[in-house]
Image 1 (spheres, rainbow, N blue to C red):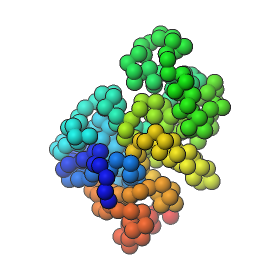
Image 2: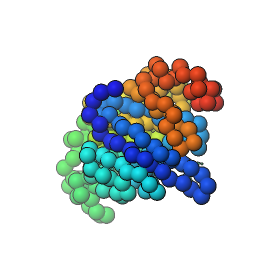
Image 3: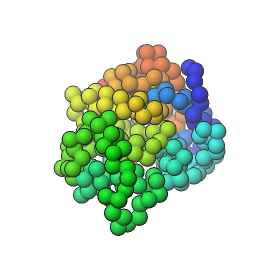
Image 4: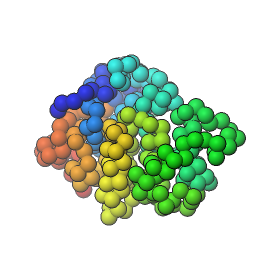
Length: 250
Ligand SMILES: Nc1ncnc2c1ncn2[C@@H]1O[C@H](COP(=O)(O)OP(=O)(O)O)[C@@H](O)[C@H]1O
Ligand SMILES: [Mg+2]
């Protein structure tokens, strides 16, 4: 494993009542290496994403992004620093069109947006058209998000995240709710767009076929701890991982 460290998690702890959701988490994320996070339900995977993206503040420990301590910084401010998140359940303005959703995100990033801002005054349209092309969604620009099937909504959710111009993007189960036959195509599109935009991705994923194909590295979570981390070819073959994680998924 080589490359520039883009994010360091150091000694992260968080508890909810008696539940230990993060315990002494220490992990480095490497720029341009996509990391898959796997682990059983309740392992603390989403909690780690929440900690890194400002939705939760750790009880102990620090998160360093690009050399700066970002522990406890609110999500909106983190986005401006280059850390974004796509949601397990896409959070879009469903009555607005796809293009309007992108323009709102672009304007928020440029601090131009306020309620009643006229979207046609926002200068990012050409850039957003290019982004939609990257996501193979150019033909959806004028449709309301509410009219889209789940797979396309997920692509638009990622496009909105990319409109925020992140360097690091966290995705929680990007293929959940999508038919198996469509998952690879969906991830192919996402991975292509992330590579083109030079965004480093961290994604939680339950489908080991997807992990094997799209992750450069895999980290295994259990009971709030990182048990293993390495290339998919090694980690997915480890007997403990097969017994505790992969076996459970099958
Ligand atoms: N905001 C919260 N309040 C209380 N308990 C939580 C909260 N977030 C997560 N937990 C608990 O922490 C543990 C880890 O949850 P989570 O990070 O969602 O796991 P995963 O994403 O791996 O399934 C679970 O036991 C969950 O119930
Ligand atoms: Mg989760």
